[in-house]
Length: 182
Length: 182
Image (tube, rainbow over the protein chains, first blue to last red):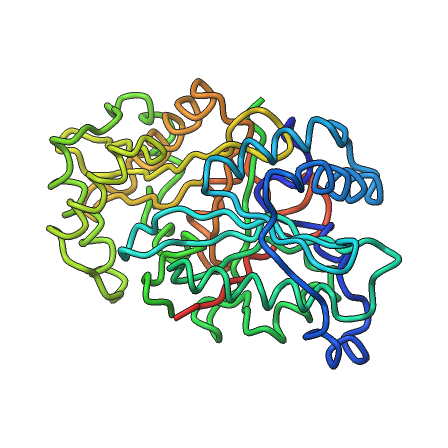
């Protein structure tokens, strides 16, 4: 819908591509290695993000362009990628910026993806738990995510981790509004 | 709900505080001066943001702290404030960062406010139109906003300006999920 691709603004439909069965996955969540990616992980990150788009039939600039884009963003410091699993087979893309109403940071979860053959084992949850821990240690006051209504697997995961789509936890629903500027 | 205050993540309830009557306001939208704020506007911005919080009974760090925070954020370049009206009596806070899926920027409308005595005359619309124009000229591919479901005045304004809370315009609803990290 935008030139920037379908992931702009809201993490959207791709967020459903995480651990598919919270039951068996939960117990083993702690056994998945998760680490902060470095420049040497750019190619891997580009492939995972490309696969992500391919799986959801979204246009992709291609693995090489994504690798270069993420390498550049990570070098800038405000974008952090966590990779998880043995290969690694999953990632989270976090974006930080100074908050307006506090002296802390706000963190946006831009992407969360687990490769299809590694789903259902708690890898998405393990990556999210590491992301929350990383964001907290870095000084973020809050984390926010855009999620499509039908993405129940993702929504259940986020809700089980303390996220809410209601203002203040029990207030009105919060919508993402977006528009293409091109 | 977060230490960062109620505006983190989603623009939320405060976004309702814009031009209250789209009818009469629309015709005169073009007559309101709107400009990019500079360091000398920090005190004004701090007062408006403080009034914003006071009106919605949200905690505020106070006008002086907000002025200093916004002065610092504007100096960093990724935060831009537009002020509108003769006094000025309204503002938009825009935040830019590089997009992931394109080489452009993404723009987040963090705050939109019009002082109560200046509502209903199209000032909110004029500020939004200037914000869209500014973001486009700066190279943003998209703009996104967090809005609470009951904020119909704000939602109507945004929808009339081409924003949608449905993926791709006619897809599923897009939710903001957030959680406090403190």
